[in-house]
Image (spheres, rainbow, N blue to C red):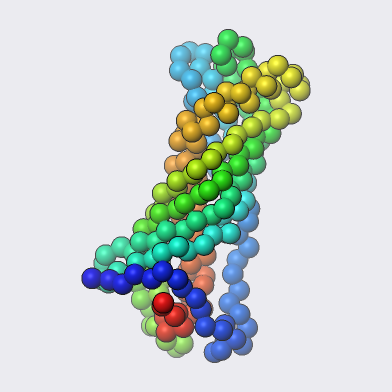
Length: 210
């Protein structure tokens, strides 16, 4: 048994707080190094990404949320207009029939992102009242349009750069599937941190459920 919320808003933060809750700076999100094996065989094409920065995840809208009682998980759906990723890039192996070892910049733009979120919450009694806390959060991303590209690679060799970008254009969803597990894990951690920073400052009764 639970209840569904289509919109959530907060009553004026100025009361009873002397100052609005201070949320941490969340962008860019920094992700760990990632290695993607994109074609098979002993000379398979491999991309290694490092110094990965993710922008846009904090610009989300809560479309729906279902808060459950007890130990049952809550469910929510968020939308993010655009996620962008910038990283440093190295590659090795053969792409199509061309040796494609090199390094440069990697950029990804994901338009039309929907995040389905599930998690567990608990309550904490504080002097300001009862507060919620997110104990566990998992999300699954659905991305309408991935666009991937590389630049400044192969000593700016035009043919190799165009061949790589053509491969990424035609195989964007496959690359996304390889990238998605780590991206989802990182965003789950970041969203849980943002939520708890907010919930630590806002008692339950300051939420208005419509």
